[in-house]
Image 1 (tube, rainbow, N blue to C red):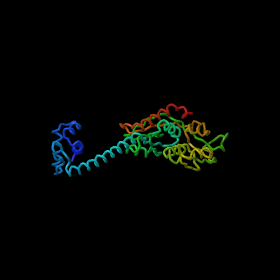
Image 2: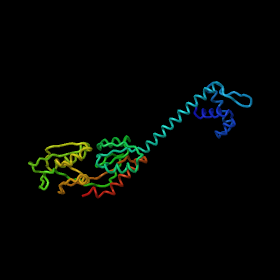
Image 3: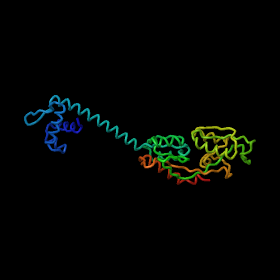
Image 4: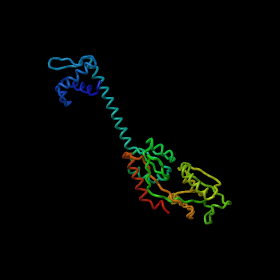
Length: 292
């Protein structure tokens, strides 16, 4: 049974007049009559009987009309749910970043401008980003290391300077990180494993030992850093935010790109496109804050 045929039947059942029903459906009366006859043959029952110059529903016709109302009512509800889900999808940001530090100011400002959006946001490693982008669990990323995959496009937005902060007991002193008598306790973000690995390799290459490693979640790292008990590699923007000094030796100042990454040949939905552009414009506008 086709839904179109069932729709035609409900019009005839409502108006009990083939001519009027055909006019409402914008089809010819013979075509409508033929469709009803085909439906009756399919169901092996009579749906209408003539009563004088008019028609009326048979008992089978009445049963079919009640079922048709139920079917079309449920279809209407399903359509509403589908439309709501589609609207939700178009207004949901699916995004990931390698560190929450990028998002503190940017995210607050974006929400103020787009309060009706929904958000699915992760803080994950670069390898996880690649997998989630490929499976479209997220639609774009903000990351500090290029995502090397043939299906992913990495767009470099700006570069930022990474510096090395030091404990407060070394204020005013010459700091020689190669001095074996200097106890070197380092603080790392527990969520940015690639970043940590890169700078540990740099320290090893420079023959600088690490005596103690501490790992803190991004949500708490600012509080720990403010106590100034550790060395830590940080973006200059974070040092400015927390008013932290840093070693000004160029040997310990590094330049790092910031990328926005998406799947190639994929169009972002309106919510993701708006957030992508917002982040891009914000970083470009405030690039000087990320440089020494």
